[in-house]
Structures are given as structure tokens and as C-alpha cells.
Image: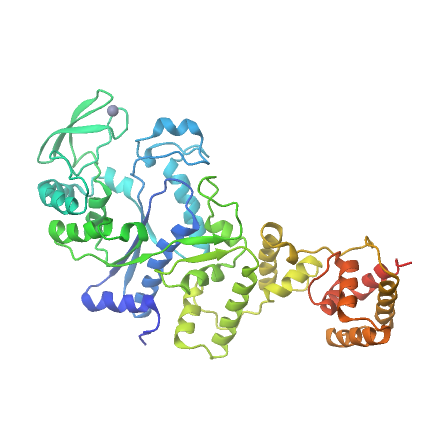
Length: 496
Ligand SMILES: [Zn+2]
């Protein structure tokens, strides 16, 4: 049944409606692997993947083509790449060596890193490397058309430029055969034959049916829509402003290639909350893998799936992580209890890495795991909860705020007042009496306070300080039972 409640389903409907007889629809995304690919780029990918899933859920055939724009010039040395790489500026990133391993190109290094992480979150597009396609001269016919329609293209581009393009402007990018850089100038074109000269002194004639050449981004984009038959593609907000590359790509697609541009959505940026070390200036960008150290793949998807592309949002690493886990668990319960509304249902389904599981996954909540992990009580968890406990552990180590971290004490490090000693010894005696349930033990706390004429604050404060050396902590009864009554008795026995 058609779902009308979720944006990707609405787009899928639009795609089908405007081209009902197409045998196979194409969703596209593209990224330039000019450095480590960060979580913000994931939005480019998942936006297309969600529309792909929506098309398939409607019984349509569809393909997801993910293009590596790896024939772009190397523009800037990122902070995590050696400075010596300056010598490669102006060369295509597919043709310079990887700074991190042998036998790989610069582009391939970042491509493979990202590809691996995409798999973990259930995104498996068909990858196309533009550099290879270009070197195979796959676009030669379209490039010939671009050359023929150079004037129309200039007109379109000039409409949105402050300064008009120079009269001899050519919609081509040629990398020099000798020095591999793009510092070339075209001397003449005849059919498929181009003569160029380079700043390095090299000069030659090439046939672009035999040697691949490139075209600038604004022309490149619509050329590949045409070549791949793209029906849907998202784009970052930078491409989407009026007069931006999407505006001109649309016009070029229609006028030069006689192609109806794909349905398009722009997506806003993803920001990071907590985890302050990630910034582009340090080169230490936030990767999918880094997010996945804290978020389960389904919850990582959920964070994106639950937000419309045009809405910017934050990925949290601070204590909000707990709430996001709790929200997801709540949605999951609603889903399996058949209480989710159609939109919630769709968000849950699309958050899954594969198909929705028939049986409700049994997982311990994130908040409770915070206590279990820090009291070392994770042995009895089921395998799913153990995996989640790993995320909790990573989170506690790297991002959790101070109030979430604690360490169970084996010695008393603090000074206690006479009254506090009395209270805590009374607690010890209660614990000695018998084994408690959390509820029963909690009841005893109140009896204790009454008997010893102590306030709740006095009691809890003293207990937390002795047990975890903090003024506050997780639910006390639960904490004591998790640590073990015996261990707490041993600790309280040290009171003199
Ligand atoms: Zn050269």
C-alpha cells in the first residue's frame, strides 16, 4: 500500500507519476573523495537510499548509482595529509598516490574507507568511479555536444555570474599528458580532435574518443544525469541556492541534452553536539565509523530517517545520546505493539539495516547499561545487549559528561560526620539481614531515614559519596544490588 506519510514515499510517487512506464528508476548520489568523508556526507547517500527503498517498496525496479567524483583536481591539502602533497595540486585525485598505503590512489583510500562504513549501515549502492568512466571515454559523444552548444551553455552560466565568462571560454578541463596538471589551455578544436598547450611547455593534439577529458562541474552534473538516466538526486544546500549549480544544471539538462532534470531535494548540514574534537581544521572529521562507536547502526539511521532532508540537525555525543536511544526504544515498542502511527511505522522500518525483524529485539536500555557497564555486570546480558553495552562503554570513555561516570569504590576515601557514620552503619546492618529486591531495599531506605531521624538528602548523599565518591549517581538500590550486597557490606565495614 502506498504510504503518504513519509517524505521519501512522496518523492517516489512523484518519480513514478512523471514517468510511469520507465522500467528501472535511478537514484543517484555523488561525493568527491578529496579527504576523509564525514558524517555530513552520509546525508547525501542516505537521502537517495531512502527514496530507492520507497520505490522498491512500491514494487518498482530501481537502482542506486553512487558516483565517486574522483577526477576532480586536488585543490587543497587536508590537515591529515602530509604537506609535501602540495606538489600534486592541480592533478586529478584519482592519479595521485595514497598518503596512507602503497598501491592505492589518494581517491581510492578515502573511497574504500567510506564504502566499508556504508555497508555497516545497510547502504549498498552501485559504485561508479568517474575517473575510470572518463578514461574509458564514455562521455565522448556528450562532450562533443557540449562543445557544439558552447554558446548556449555560456549564456545560461552568465545569467547567474557577476562577471561574464571570457569569450574564448571552453567548457572543458584537460589534464596535461606530461605533468598531469590542469594548467592547460585549448588552442583549437576540430570534431573530436583538441589541441592544447600546458604551462609546463607541453603541447599536443588529442582525440577525446581515445583520451578522456573532463568538463567543469556545472556542466558535468547534467551530463551525467543524461548518461545515467537519473530520476532522483539530493544536493547539499550549497548547490541549491538560486543560481547555484542545480539551477544551471537544470537549464543545461533541458537545453543541451534535451533531458528532464531529476527530482531534487536539498539537504541541510549535520552538526555535531558534544565531541568537540571534530572539526575540519584539524582534519579530524567525524566519520560514520566514529558515530558508530556510540550509535547502533539502526539508531544512526534513525537519526537521519527521522529528520526531513531540508531540516538541519545535530548528532549528539553528550548526554542526549541517552535520550536518542530511549526515543528509539520507545518507537520500537510502539512498532511491535502495533501502536505506531503510519509515519512512525515508516520511520521504524526505514531505520532498519535490512528487513524488519519478525520478533521484537530484546535489548537492555542505554541508561541502565550505563550502570551495568560501570559496575562490571554485563556478563549475563544477551548478545544484542552486549553489543549495545560496547557502545555504552565507548560513549563513557570518550564523550559522557562527568555526571554519568562513576567508579565503584573499594575503600572509603572521604571524611564522614558522626551522624553519617551512624546512617551508613545502619545501612550495613540492613544489608546484612537478607537479600533484597530493588523495591524492598528502596523501602528500607525510608525506614532507615525515619529511624535515624535523617533527611533523604543526608542519607543518599552519604551513600553515594562512600560507594562511588560522588554526590549523585544512578538509582541507589539498583546500584547496591548490582555491585552486590556483600561488597557494599565490606566497604561499610571500614567505617570506624
Ligand atoms: Zn603540463
